[in-house]
Image (cartoon, rainbow, N blue to C red; front, side, top):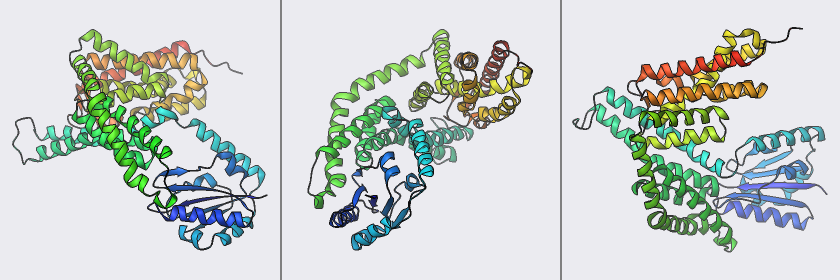
Length: 457
């Protein structure tokens, strides 16, 4: 029997999404057709297709007025119509789908393998949710940090007269920073529970900010709100004609109340105390402790080049920007620039130890390095991990330690060398640049020492 898949979605995700699904299901039963329907409504994705189901399907019906990730169906026969068409003529759509010509088996196999590879490479679980929040928060941190930095260019300070351009820029930057923690929490919750998690996540993030719990409280609020909304979505059962109440009223109300009460009475104060302690410790760091912190952050940035450890160090530094702690951010970005730059320099000073392809790759790595894209080192590390990874870790650790020792600060969490000329974006600019240069040279010299010359045929 030919298997048909159908996905339904309307802009509001309340009525037509489910009416279309019911119409298709009834028509399939009446005509003895094997059908599975995925709904993408306000409550989230239900009955989501697996890669195996897509591979086995004869054709797909897309009855939607919004995005339904159609890229999943590449190479498959697709019948695409407005969602209302599935309500009016479900039997006709099923017949059209059955009459579609199936894709070639060889093509399907290739597409499934590609889909599996993409899925396996993507982040999953708590790490995925955290990175979703961090990614959504970053534009606010970048814009806010640079606007505040520009405000100093106009001479704004604590006692400046209101109404100046500098004061306005400082106010705008401050507004961006005010949204930072709520957006972090909101998008963590959104990643977990989709739309129903957004409102409680934003509210929990706002409470984290107001109670002094900072970015740690924002992370906690995001996970509490997300999983609360997710479980409410699963366990609250209503008649189909009342399903629209769940994402619009019931889940936001209950999840926001639960998240808010936990943040006010359970999470906020202890996390706020921990955040205050961390801030006080960082602001009172002596030279030795600053160097050790820079060493640790630098080594983490280089170890997996964009992986979980790298992102943990980066998230830690970005979160501290909301508490006006700028030193770790400088160390982290400098240490993230060093690996690709060091590899590029190594291909110049030790060409006999690199293939022509690696020398060419080194040129591209230099561009990635100055742009703060640590992943530019991955091809080299994959080819010779035992020599490359220790070299880049040492170089990045040296860079991070020197950045902290020099007292360098950074208000923008990204941009690489391109943010260095912006007035007041970087503190101790000359010494900061020197830290990057020294780490790059250390990485290159270690690689030149450890790598063996190529064997000529």
